[in-house]
Picture 1: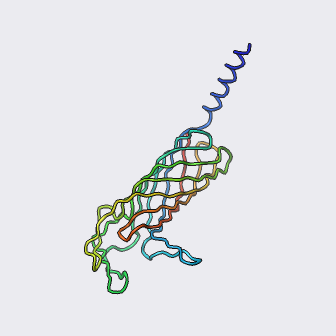
Picture 2: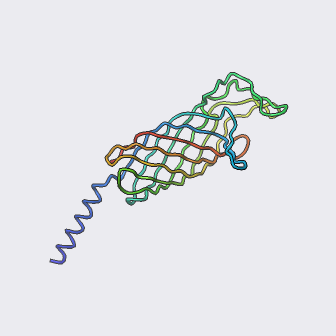
Picture 3: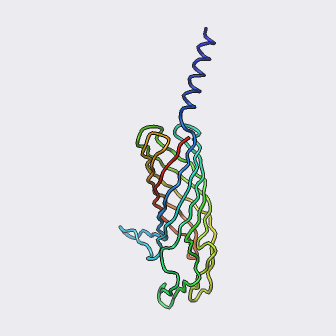
Length: 198
């Protein structure tokens, strides 16, 4: 009798576990702000460094709260690339020929999320790689041709999923630290879109 009770408990636990979706796929719109700096009480950024694009994520839930996954995204310049702009005293940037791709990034992450409910907040930490000005180049006066640049990236993010079923809606924000041609960069990424659970 004892063995029967244990077997029934094990089967019930397995069935409950199977009812909870363990995989998530997310496809969203992404808006990025590059080279954000904190000075005094204010965030500052360099004009012309906003970009827009898309991102995708896959998450595998290892527990109801913890998930591991990978994400990748690409954003595009929203500015006219056929121009010459100033970058300081005695410095100009000729943007002719610059890539339309502002940044391409991919990373692995660990996510902690509320396990149930119609509103599920989450936080994650991530690390990976990025490439700015993918396939393009910029001429900087005094520095010559500055091409694309690969870099190790790391950061953290968070957001909220709205919805209990197999389809939900996500709003999130990420901090991404990358290396540009001017050194390390602090980037903010806002994203939103549908989440598919299965």
